[in-house]
Length: 322
Image (cartoon, rainbow, N blue to C red; front, top):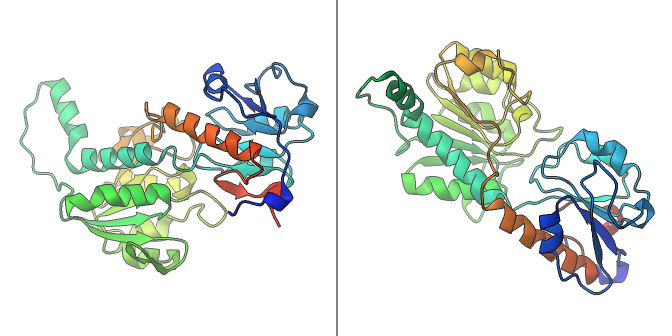
């Protein structure tokens, strides 16, 4: 979005949830104030009426609604996550919402490749054999020359695509609409079932919203060939959990999942014991790269707010809108 000097939205006081983030913002630009608030206790050094912007704790959730309701003049809600599902329901329409798009891109792409390679090279089976004292030579499909269907062409999708290309995969990309971008053809979601029929690996990295909930449904999953791998590093609800579970438990499909619906995955859930399933507990963007990147983003946001510019990564414009 363009900077709007003529409609300068005043932001003077923002809150951050940790002392580390508060320290990272120092020194603050003239006219800006930052205070500590984790949304569980009380803000340290500012009345609710004085707060203009709030940086959410790293783990977003609807349990922040009561705390945010005490901030009558909230101009900006800043997430530390790339996804923003659930956030619009926490605040009124006058409040802009910004994400941490870009902060998690490299780490989440790294997670996607880790899951793909672990599944395609049988690393889960090798670990079981190691612990049981077995030595087995098995030929696994690998990643090279595989047909990969990537659903999601945003920042993280581009990072995943860049990491897949050195493996000489046949990559097909799907976005919300069919188009051509700098990297070539992008297919629309209406083509998913047809494209799935030719895919050996399906990677999901699209935001969760009304249009993408259960985008990967029973129809798409049933179109995948026997033995295909489903990798989800987006949000659990983008995939129909019941349909995926049926396919994996039956042994027809495999899955490598960093997210699931619901989370946490219940201890007794059949996917936990299903052969062909690798499950990690939403580790995607949670690496050592996160802290320096989120601090850099927040420093830039503060500078933009002080200069009367629109914040980066707005997904809802609030008072910056037309």
